[in-house]
Length: 201
Image 1: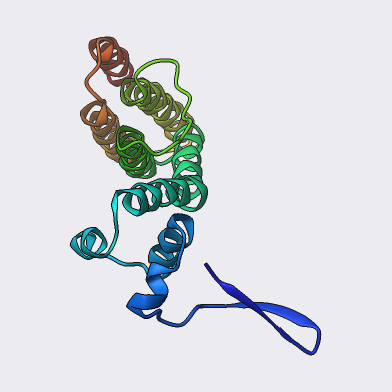
Image 2: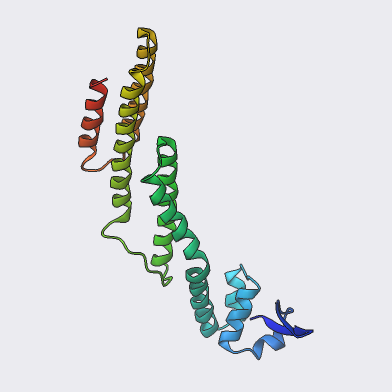
């Protein structure tokens, strides 16, 4: 509920002034709900006290529509960016961090849907479980890359001490990969595959 003014032919939007109780009674349900949203009224008891059921219902609907229009796209974008980074990063630390971020924004979206916000979020099944499998697949990818890097590097090292030191570092990285795996029905298989890489060092 913003008023438009003209100045030298230009149109701009300005926030309305506070309305008096008498002026508020002259507003339609839609206008009153818009006014409450524009003023960002945080106190639901105040809304209940000064408005009837029709206004409260309209206010709730408009709040949900605003969440869907203005907040949801940002959460969805961050979630999708995090999923994409999980499958491209070479850093285990980045992968785990992005997994946590993706899960956080997914739970936010799920909460809004359960609260009746009109959102569409497509998933083949349980997204949280899908994300675990997605993370485990790419943790294993990082483990394989770590193993390949070790094999390439160790061929260039001249002393046994340098080779042993690099081996120990690689073992630690592979152990971190195992410890970072998410619990799913296939976790033991991923562990076995990374253990096999460790045994080949």
